[in-house]
Image (cartoon, rainbow, N blue to C red; front, side, top):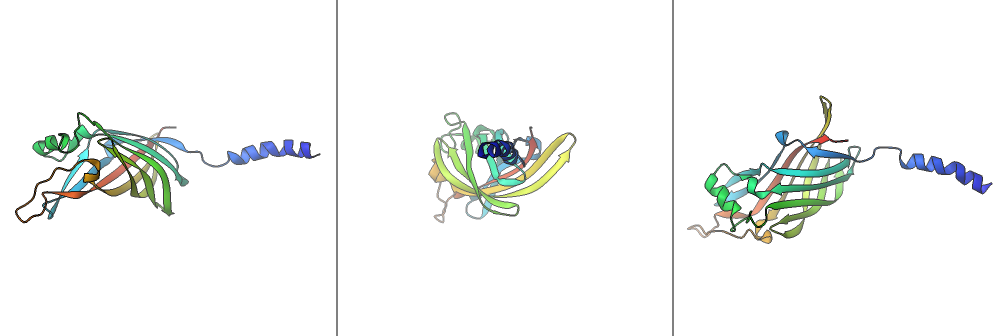
Length: 196
């Protein structure tokens, strides 16, 4: 009797296990996304820039944001602050050393503090082969259909001390301050396209 009951329950349990939404794969629509940053200049203003060459591997279930997993790879040589001399300096050994360390990566490790559409995305950020754990304050902006595609939007940001990743160059001002701020805010504004 027990054996027959178990044989009846197994298919039901299997159906329950697969009932609901499974995580799907997403890519970044780079034409409608930005990965950028801002940093203080002379302590009185912000210099902003962005990276034009990046890619990502993202999986998630839109009904369960705790399922979000992301790996983002950024080509640091694609940096653009609208100043060619400054961009070349940022690519050089004083900062990113783009020839030796061409990629900056972020790999998520989990989601926490989910409240509605806002959450913390934890992960490991690697710059110049130095890896540090960071937490991004993120917001899910919703989903939309566009043509034949399903899309989703996110914003996320975090602050890092660039010196911890080996970006240590600076110069003192006449007043004893620094030309380039130590803390850099990284800002991601992403439109994702569902792949499957």
